[in-house]
Amino acid sequence: DLSELKKETETQKKDAEHKLKVFEEKGIADKLKLQTSFEMDINKVQSFKGNVDTYYIEELSNLIENNKFLIEQAILSYDFGINKSFFEEINKQLEILKQEFSNLNVIFERSKAISSNLEDILIRLISKRDKFKEEFAKIKREINITNLDPDDYIKIKKELEISKTRLIEIDKSEAKRKKLDNQLKVSLGDLDRLWHKEFEILQEEARKINDSKTKLSVKVEYKARKDKFLSKLQNDFKGEGIRGTLFEDVSNKYEDFIDIFKDGFQKLKTIIKNEHQQSHFRKHFESDFYDLLTFRVADEVTINFEDRPLREHSLGQRASALILFLLAQKENNILIIDQPEDDLDNQTIYEDVIKEIKKIKGDMQFIFATHNANIPVLGDSEMIIACEYTDGRNIKVETGSIDKKFPIQEKVIRIMEGGKEAFESRRKIYNIWNNEETK
Image (cartoon, rainbow, N blue to C red):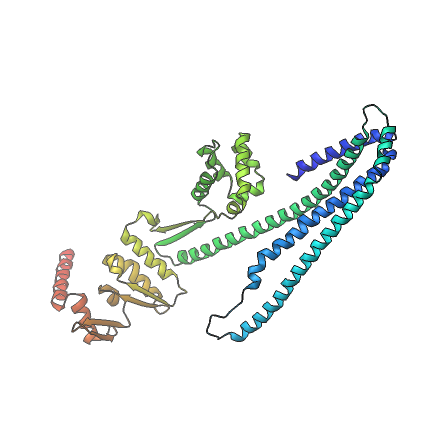
């Protein structure tokens, strides 16, 4: 929390300035000017050397250690030498990279030597200060002011310099934080747009199906799977006494975790009123930042068949809906369906399959494996392939259009209709039924 740290540091700075003013008014600052100068200079050198050791040399060491394995490996081709020439070039570049990496080691050793030189300079500076110890002590003895300790002046002066340095670092950190925050918001906006693009693709596919004017329709709603959002909330933020109804309110008020972040938890405060629970929620949110902000609340896809959700239909009706779905994918060149009669009755095959196939026949190639005569006969098949397992080892294949009497029509009647006698018997019965209806 940089804002709180900044307020605290500014208070420390003002307090130190106020105390130093008292020393200046009494003339102590001038008398201790030499000692103060030494102490400030020593403090600056110590701080600089500490930063060199911690941030520069240590980072160099980590860089070398973490990339040692990468640089030392050889890049080999595993494709039987087809791309050998490319890998020869790559390995030449790798050798150059290895040389550059070895230069890092040289830089690292030189930097350690510089750190050692800085340590030597610091020791000499401290030694020079120590030569004035007697003079400093004499000045302090001459200062005889009640409630004002000369040593406190040096200490407060150091505190002031530290506060000033810290404020500069806080401002730098704040600028970096703002930059990162803006980058995060831009990235989250990009992510949200990609999610919406995904939704638009689904919508476009649903539109194609709906435009086919069949019994099948598809509805897509953006980020509508609130049950998934609620489940994520309950699993990730359980504990601390937050009730399930509160989670439901959060999932209803917000679209997703990005929405919570962009809102700055403002609406959350009106839902979860307990400050301890609010703190628990925010703390967990920040500890699991990446996982939550990239959690995709799924789109709701509802498939309706005859104006009712598909899940409410029988297995056969679902199979019929699936075939209608496949037929709606008009960008496909070929569709292969294996024995649809296993799940569909003859009426459904005719009403939902054959009629739709005849509408788009010529635009798509259909291949059916079937024992149901309705499909090739009523579908006016261009080519029928009749297969017969003859001697236990071979398959006899005969082909032709539905108009070919021998052997195709004969095969359809014998194999699919149960033979000519069965076909004629059914035809007679159908005629009897028809005559009875006319009477």
